[in-house]
Length: 161
Image 1: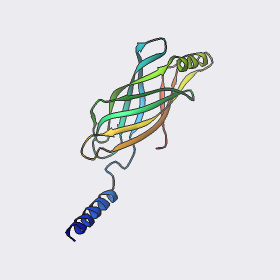
Image 2 (image 1 turned 45 degrees about the horizontal axis):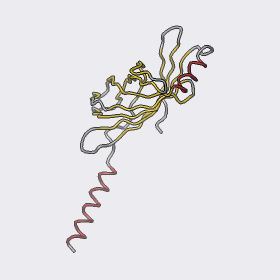
Image 3 (image 1 turned 90 degrees about the horizontal axis):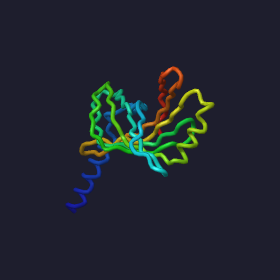
């Protein structure tokens, strides 16, 4: 009898916790700010990928990892991850870095399409892993472009997956 009461109480507490509003009412905005080669081999390249994370919420966002996929000019380009721990203050931004891997065939496909391309359109999506007891994650999805001739970058925010 006592165990049923405890089980019911635990269930109600979990149910109420699941119904509480999230401290992050808006998704983070993530944009590509840097892409540099780290290691180059015959079959793949490792790239350092710099990402700017904007926190539009009224609470600090403590991040201890991420996973992402990058498309360039409409084609899959690289997948990556990072385990840096950063805190993005409320209503602010921070830059972090991950490592992505691109296959030589994918890189060659992008280079073959480059002569007619006037810019670089990118789409980045993934997950930010939050630190703390809840161990929650936040998805992100955004796109932007880089004009190869004027060095300007524009970003458009995409829908959350």
